[in-house]
Length: 212
Ligand code: CO
Image (tube, rainbow, N blue to C red; front, side, top):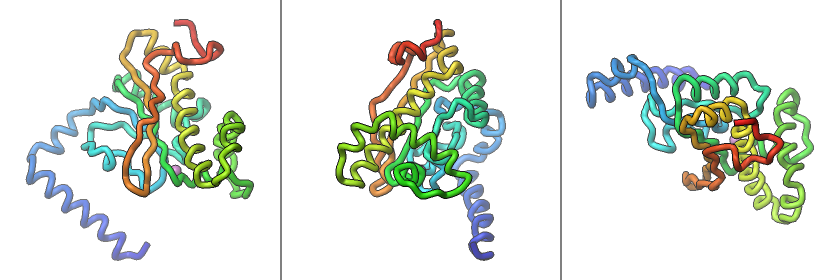
């Protein structure tokens, strides 16, 4: 990144502030009063999938957690902290796991190349491949298999969210909380709803259901 490009980012920020204030002089003072976003977004860290921008959301509307391949790992303190705060303090009513076609993390999980430290993260995605081995290995076209793997990974992360004690405890408390799985297509900008939804724990395999 050259210095001119770096400087332009700060210039862009000043222009953005000016534009926002021109439309609404209280824009920032209102945001400074606090946040009550209805949505928690769990997405990929990929630079081409900016959460707010692709759903037309303003600052204050979406609480965001992003990592490589939009994973929900129940030993990940970062994810758990975001989830706990979003559900128990902010009281979001929807959690969206949004994956995307062309995901580098998912692609890496399909292959055998060793990348280094990140292999430990990728391993979790490989587990998703194993869960769906029969379906995925029947798809001969590699691009189609890749796309399906992206979708199945989103679904598994939705299940993993529903399995968490944080989410199940909210349901037990009769808190309104819906979980959804989406996939974004980098090629055309369109988001598809994978229609994998949870609003209670009845859709979970019995062994994962906590007593409610
Ligand atoms: Co990705």
